[in-house]
Length: 204
Image (cartoon, rainbow, N blue to C red):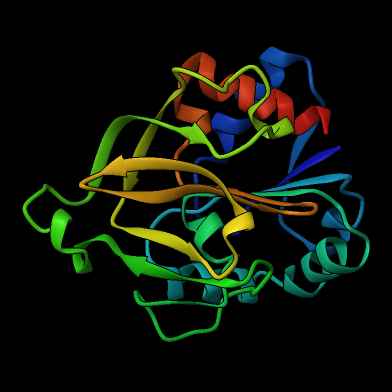
């Protein structure tokens, strides 16, 4: 069962619609008891880093999520701000993140080559997997996804960068470490490219 964490952030219905078309069993979860039964987890998110952490903590699902991901090694996919909160911290806020992947979230506006560009980075852009990844199976070339963000995940370890994208500079648009995955773009809004990626996650 793919469980989509509904803590008040992210378009969970869009994910459900994709999985319905794929004939993949998925549901939203709003309580720790419901989340307990997950075999895979999607952690969506939009908006501000601190607000996302506050909502997740207030949902009562944080401890169960930690146990599933870190102890039981259940695959998790963080999307947009849901990816950013996988980090230990963010320049956007003051609260600690989940710390599932070693790294921190930085502002695109802090990079000199990006300052002359429009922010947020919004619209379609290429995504280049850094190496063969089951998440990007059949998406190794000419993959385009929909972005809407002003911050990016800076990994401590280069091997945790799963894909790169260029916008004034190269930045990590996907991360992975073991059972933990994150994408800065929105697969649920990325047509057949996003559908393929979500199917790959379901097939892990």
